[in-house]
Image (tube, rainbow, N blue to C red; front, side, top):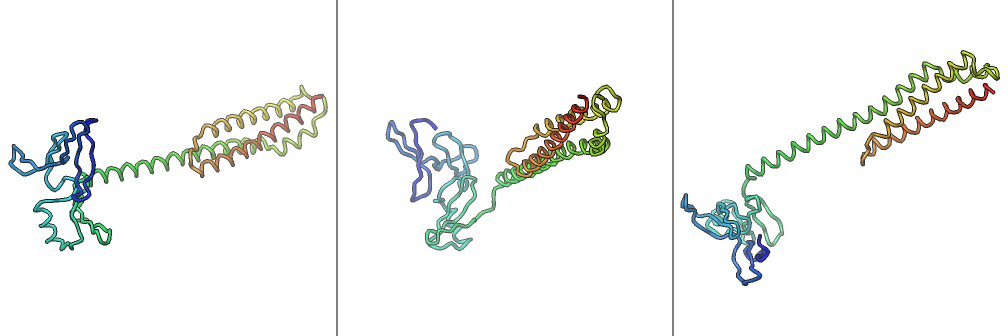
Amino acid sequence: MSEEWVSALDEKTGQTYIFNTSSGETKWLWSKSKDEKTGDVVFRNALTGDIKPEDQVGGKLTSQKEDELRKKHKLTEHEEVYTNKEGRIYAYNSKTGKSRWLSPMPKSAKRKASAAKAVARIAAVVRTYLITRQLENFSKALKGIDELRKTYDIEKLSEGMDSLKNGSANSQEHKEVQTKLIAMSEMITQALLKVDSVEAGNNHLIRHRRRKTVAKLLKYADETDELKTKLKNTAK
């Protein structure tokens, strides 16, 4: 719309009119016109020149169409007939403040609604898939470490350090324990980095699972560091 033209709604008719701020001219946005090709009576947009069938112009119907609808739907004296932006006709009861549809939803609007629902369904499926994958990352991160801890038998490893004699840093047993602890530390660090890369966004489930996973990994890291310190002390 040109900056010189301003649109407003006429409360009596429910139709939109435009006002020229420079010349002071006022006219309806949609006015009756004759289609040169078909000869049909249509409404023409004063600004764009676009044309629409009479019953698809938003606002209050002021033609024979309203009389037909009044008889068909037995409208009361308090009900006025309007069309919305999509061209769907409805009746508004000024006494009760309630509205009711008088025509079905246009096919174009139905297609848009169906497309929007389809997009929403696809988005929901994608979100569910991504959330599932992210939760799987947490499980995998812990599973690998739990399996390694089980293989190394961390509890027995800790107990076995008590039998190591001081100054045994060069012994084969000392080196084996050291290798295992280094492997544990590296795996815990990799798991923490993997968990940290997961985007939680506003999903409370993912944020909760991430906090629990990180807490468990940090606990494993502390235990491993304690074993490293214990092992180091046996070499003195």
